[in-house]
Length: 299
Picture: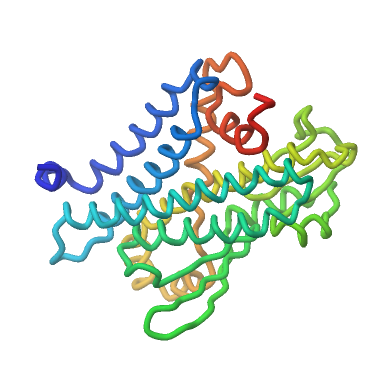
């Protein structure tokens, strides 16, 4: 019955419904964030990965494949990836508990595995055919299907955030090495909230007078993970970009070095929708989730 229902809709229609469903689910959390449980956050991460991958798999299905079967395959694989993403966010809580940034590295590798599994599923590629690691605007791809190879690509939106972050800031190399995340610090409070830090995509800017408050750092790292949560949306444009690449030598060369992080405007749009009529900071679901995994006792 489910497969029959899915087969009745075009992929464009379902992808539109997906974003509507995400908006409705997030909006329904208003004034209820204090009641959100660990299990509900797990369901959100698993569900987002599963549905996002299922829709991507349908968009990228081969002509001889049945839409319903492809969706279900993407759904279970994406759900597996979402489970790993949830687990990675749980590990981030250890930063505040143990007062050590080094916990960010194992969390980052688990997160990268989850994000990669979802991307593979959404692109309708065989399981485990590609593993990706994102550090700031840098994307390192490990292709394991047929012949192992490593490829480097740039994330243009993240590069833009980095260029914006460089102005009037100082790179925090020690924190970067300890965490695997990109940190800058600034003496200026302009653009940095009262809590002393802000995430721009997957770049984090700290106020210099922030006394290494691990809960704040963990909170911002979760925001960078939320940026990765919507990485699968880039696969929705695979067919269009391939057609463009086939018809343009210039773009074909660019495409070899660029991975379009389309999640930047999508996540920002969802974040702003959450801000509408929010009567407190943590009525915004993204802020609630970030604080929950940083230290839920501070909510």
